[in-house]
Length: 196
Image (tube, rainbow, N blue to C red; front, side, top):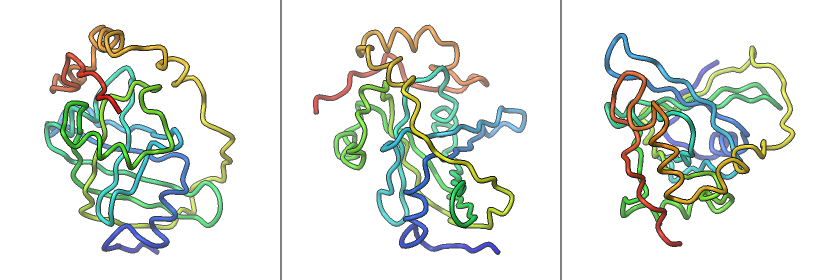
């Protein structure tokens, strides 16, 4: 039923790249800390960087739990499910790192995401994940669901923001600079997006 893979390539890579949604799970080291599970979508915001590394764009939102957990301990699991076609679930367990706008790697990493304008969504970080365990299992219990299109709401909400107004928005939110459990989240003030 389940299989462990040494790398993200071939059929596995094709499957991951074809999915319209994936999920991320992180947690603080504290045993009573808040476990975070987030859906991720937006076409073009995910990329397989190499056989052991994936990345996704981290956009503006009302919290920064994933960023905070990764800054503390780096543990992350990503999961994809087949909602169409043959049943399958793929999980990548690994170490994650938020790469912020002022990181020298920023420009090169953005080249892996040519299909989306990150600035229109309030792009605040690129999450890189180095796989430590890659496995797939049956998805017999996952229902069939169809994809219609990305919701336009995220873009329409954040495309009008400047770097300054986005920074002001983040400063107003309770769980951006600090996680729910008080861990350091998104570093503020928000550095401006580098010129492309």
